[in-house]
Length: 110
Length: 114
View 1: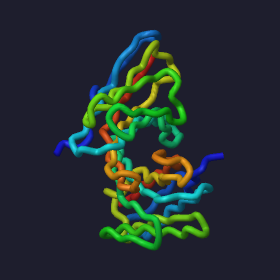
View 2 (view 1 turned 45 degrees about the vertical axis):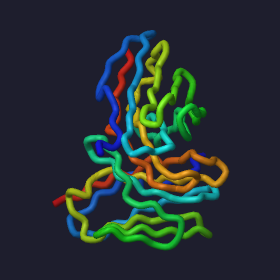
View 3 (view 1 turned 135 degrees about the vertical axis):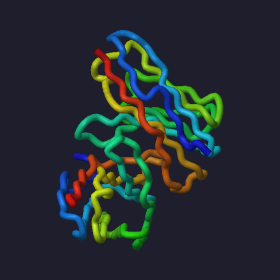
């Protein structure tokens, strides 16, 4: 069983739709990261959070530590949001290591 | 700042050959990581380093070696390449001493072993 599970695995949306990607984890964590992997393969960090909620533009990330769950929301989705979104956690007991989900592949259709 | 750079971008190896994947960061980060990404799988940690002269194994270290002689460089060595090592390899770095600063990723190296 993976320490980090994401859902859905694949998601297709029409431009303008509100999108939610979910991440559940099974270990105690010091931080959770949301990453975006572009079709060309590059990976960039979107958010790092350990509690509450963060917002960057049309992206919102929330975390519930008690429920071991995080969500990434995209408002007014756009075709340029098409990418793979990866959830990663830094475990309390694993020191400097991160565990990664398998990613959610998002396609936004014009 | 160039961030995290990796070379080469692509490489084809024959079974049994060896090679070194280069990784350099110019952000003075203490922590550096090597991951592999296989289709349909999450990133898996191969090796990591918490500072120059210190390295440690991750989840999937077999068949690989690393060194960290400087803060900037963290090369990954493949000895006796096998088809199972066909993957995309990412190097990453982060700052902070024990704090959860975000990771910065290199562009990746796509390796095929035939």
